[in-house]
Each structure stands twice: as structure tokens, then as C-alpha cells.
Length: 306
Ligand code: KMH
Ligand code: ZN
Image (spheres, rainbow, N blue to C red):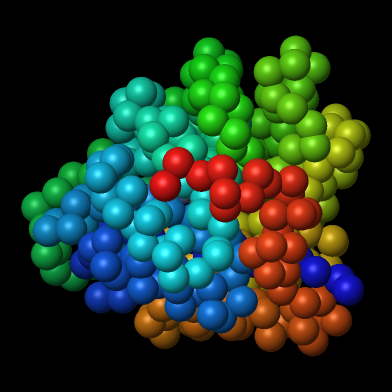
């Protein structure tokens, strides 16, 4: 059976509460969303956490644990924890979740980039919280730091805790970064690539660029699985392109707040259902969490730290 991994990125650290009433903020909302996306066909839930009162992204370990334990109690979805965290979070705080929770999967951002969000403030008429506008506008002068040193340090921690890194690739040079880390024995094959497309500061979300990324990865990295996530209106078309090229797909309100032009998605599960329907029309079935574990070589739920 042609099985592919559908990931749902539930909340992220990009969108802010004033942009959508459906953006999950509290642990309870995130737990509900993780179960909902599992029912809709997602095999992996990608998790960030936020201050439950204000929605400000953070790296609160107690909140991570509360969500992880409750979701695990309710379903067997794979949990992928971000090591990207809130924009501007310290390197130590970002990666702490890997040693605290000993998850199966964590992100690993494979290079630094300008992470521009200042332009998305235009379509918000009224701000609920004081932090939102400065957080977004501040990205005009923000570089998302992922140096070779922090990548090495993160990978040591991730591997020491039995997790697999999902390498976030925002541009073609990051494939070269990863090829270097593999060659030095710092990153282990087979690797799992998440092509992150359409971020201002990264590679534009076009099919030509996706083919370019896949071909470059085939040239520079021997064994890999790849997935695609794309910002905003590019989300579904680029995920469909990934499926056609043999890849996996990531949707979720972290990357797009919409289900179609001008219509806010009420849940990441709506986007999961949409990409699952497209996959099925292409003769592709969504992988179950267990099948995703086999595809990615994950350690299984009996070795988690939660
Ligand atoms: N926020 C996405 C653009 C991470 O969390 O470490 C990429 C991402 C990376 O999800
Ligand atoms: Zn993320």
C-alpha cells in the first residue's frame, strides 16, 4: 500500500491569537486538537506550546509534559516537539524538551535564516494582546539562529535521548549543511527532511523549487524520507506536489490559518481531511502512527520520557 505520513502542526510560533479565534493556545485546546487530527488521519502531531493566558509562544516544560501525557493516554499519534520554539528563545531553552520528555521525534532547524513575519501584521485590524504586534514587527530585524555549533549540540542531545531529528530545510543551502553533518558523523542516516517552503527569508514555495530541493537531496544525501510544509496559501498545493513526488505532507494552523481562500480553518483537522482526500484521489493512503514509526524508524511509545 502506498502509505504516506500526514503531519499536523497544531499551533506553532508564527501566528498569533488575533489572527484566528481557532488557533489553539491552551494545553486543553492542544490536547483536543492532537486527538482530532489523529482521528482525521494524521500520524504525527508537531507541537509548540504557548502561555495559556496570552498565547505568547514559550518553551514551558510543564505544559509540554501535560500535553504529552494526556495525548498519549488518548491515542497513539507520534508527537514531534519543536526545538525551534518561540522566536528569540534561548538555544538552551529550545532544546530542553528533548531531554525532558525523551520524545520519538523533534525538529532540528538545519541552518540560520531571516525569519520575516513583520509583513503579516497588515491584515490584523485589532490586537487582543500587547505582545503580538511587537513580536511580529520585531522579525524585521531577526535572524533565527541555528549555527553548526548549536546544531551539533542539539543533535547530541536528541540522539542521546533516543529521538529522531526532523531536519527543517528552509533553503537549498541547508541540504548542504546537513550533508556536511552526515559526513562528519554528527547526523545519522537515514534522515527525515521537512522542506519548509514559502517563509520570507527562505525558499519560495514553487513546484520547481520543490523538485530542485528533492534532486539536490538525492545528489547530496543518500537515504532520506522527505515531507513538505508550506506557508499560507501554498500549503495544500505544495503538499499535493510532495505526495506526487513520493513525499509526505505537513499541514496545520502553524503553517496556514486557512482551509481555502478567505475561509479560516476551524481546526488543523480540517486541513488533514483535505490533504487525506487529495491523497486518496491519487491512490495514496495516510500512514497510521504505527506505520509512520516503521517508515521513520522511531523508537516506539514504550521508550518515551512521558
Ligand atoms: N514553523 C515552521 C515554519 C520548528 O518548529 O522547529 C517550521 C518549524 C520549525 O516548525
Ligand atoms: Zn514548528
